[in-house]
Length: 117
Image (tube, rainbow, N blue to C red):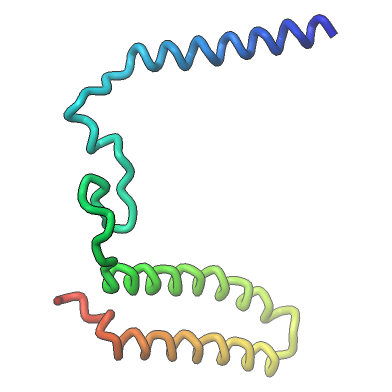
């Protein structure tokens, strides 16, 4: 029990010393304020927070997520080929590919595939 107390005290002491040491050595200056601030979703945190959100940025993000999830879902379909009947596998694969093509067609209608604006 005493050993556990000593180890806990030592860990607490070392972690606090490392934090204090890093705060002393860090060079946080006034002109580095923008570098240290978070930058998310295309918003500048130093500007007014009530600016409208860019729909183009949102739709590009959705395109990325769709194609990212697509890869994660196609790989198990390939492995499923050995486990199920060929016709069942074909139906599943065609359904998935048709859904992706419908999404691609929708993005094309919204002019999101046109990268030159």
